[in-house]
Image (cartoon, rainbow, N blue to C red; front, side, top):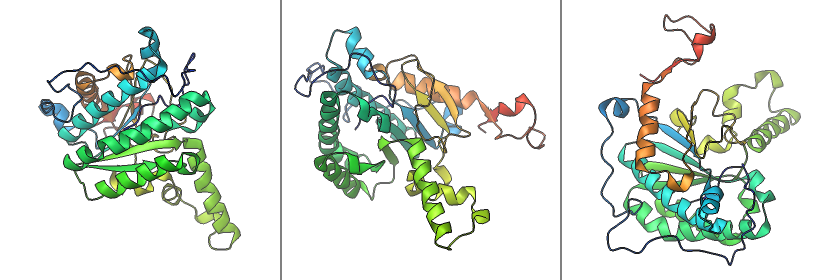
Length: 301
């Protein structure tokens, strides 16, 4: 499915919707990103035992990938689709329960209109082209964000993909589209404020779980709404307004690899690094509550 770096913006991204450049190399042998390629090799026993239930990714670096090759920015977005297909295949094969990807941020609407138009078209085309393979491989699609801002054709493609894949159980692919973490929290708090104003709720009774139930991630299984691991590609080290509420205790991993080049090896390395970390969620190993800096270590076991 989607393709866009989440909220970082890219200099020199003024590619028109017409300047589409094919970057795939024709071959009779399925590429590593193809649904027909050989299944990814198993994880190590440690990584398999301590794999994240919910993995989130900020797919960053499409424009830089294209610029380094003197290609239009759109070529980077196209190759980004291949990278996402590879990562989705790996997540499904390695029994990750949910994969959330930042496809198009609320801030991305500020980009040059030609690039935005192209991205809407590419997102729509990818959903349509990939849906049969997603059904075949047990991947369920869900989309979160302000879909009132996207094109009618893209909304229809989203609804079609969600409907066709709704019975799939191997992997939940959650796409953040026209999404912003601050905007999501604002909508949730406004909803609670309206309930208070209507006399349906006392402000003193508002809990964290009540806020969580009004966020865009409320459709995810309650046990994995908060990502265990966030990967951001391209070397940037910021959240870019992505899942700000849900990432409170998420492990962060920043990869220097540009998103179009991020493949099975990178994904495997990330999960191996995650398995080696310790997560304690603010507690000490001896069971004491919040402590000194050592409480930042987290035990994945």
